[in-house]
Image (cartoon, rainbow, N blue to C red):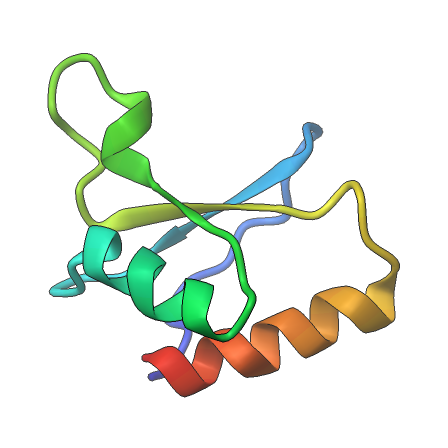
Length: 77
């Protein structure tokens, strides 16, 4: 899977990642088996939107931990 668009966040503690055609609830289950936590975007929308987005936290981990988590997440996709 290729990243088609990336915007540097202006602030905050999370990255929002758009994954067209991916069931992020199912991805959350698969990622947990690789010890990677993510949250489906739909959990943060009262209107039922954000279904093709996931939210990743980055403020707690060092760069090496984030890189390892992204490698594991890539195995799930």
